[in-house]
Length: 316
Ligand code: UT7
Image (cartoon, rainbow, N blue to C red; front, side, top):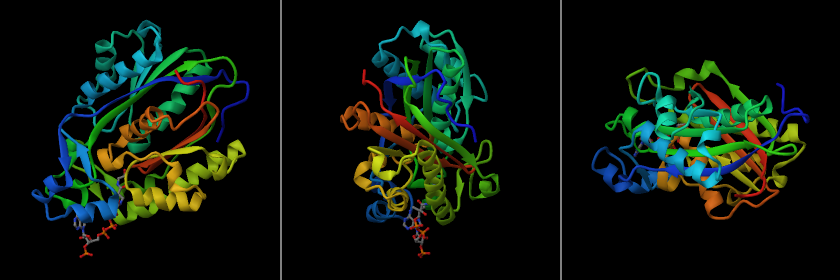
């Protein structure tokens, strides 16, 4: 697979934003809805609570607005908007609705690679900048509460709603994207899927098993491309599905779990929003400094996988 050529025009993240619906659903709330317990959910997944009751377009607008404000760039200079989502509010026109609300005039598109979508979008944004654009807004937003079967304890305890966004801008020099990988295995599509208009269907154990494998594979490919190992990585921003998946992947990559950003205890699995939410949390807590190597790695329905290694630039 081709990787970022050293001659490519570089880009860097200038601003980030998040949005979570106000309503919080705790594990104790779930105990009243399905046969489960707070202790079981925490022990098997690490999740304590999640935000629900959102809508993809409004959450994307709020996160996008925050990212643009933080970047300090004029909204009129955004050249493209990528909305990664697996739960669009409408059949089409979701990213265009976000564009309009933010007062942007730029190309827009929706991208559906399930929980890997944000990393796919980030890589695409870097590619678009390499061939001439200056500023790309990348948003991951999902309303999984809308496609969750709240009577199915196998899935109801895992998912939540949210949005995260970044502004990626051209810069002098090579930029932040050191190496990346996108991958998919369509033969595993039947272990995690949803019909149009249907709810999430999942073979949890099999998803778990494959998730660890594809996260490790993708991360290893990206690190090998960059000529680095786990010990060179300052922080991992993993997809927030299950803390045990993150732990197992970290063990195999030789990276202590303390060097990951984890928000799933408060958010549950928010699909395309999960990696930008965890990235923003790390940035807000000053866990990322200029020059750090930051590894984003996700997996999702499809099954898709993606990773991106960033050499962090100056923080705005
Ligand atoms: O973006 C990707 C989205 N999906 C995922 O990442 C899911 C990946 N898979 C997982 O995270 C885990 O497989 C789960 C959290 C879904 C389940 O954990 P597990 O350790 O694999 O549990 P299990 O499926 O082996 O179930 C163990 C027991 C079963 O009972 P028996 O057969 O041992 O009597 C289940 O019926 O736990 C039972 N169980 C529950 N008990 C209480 C299943 N769901 C629940 C529940 N509360 N919510």
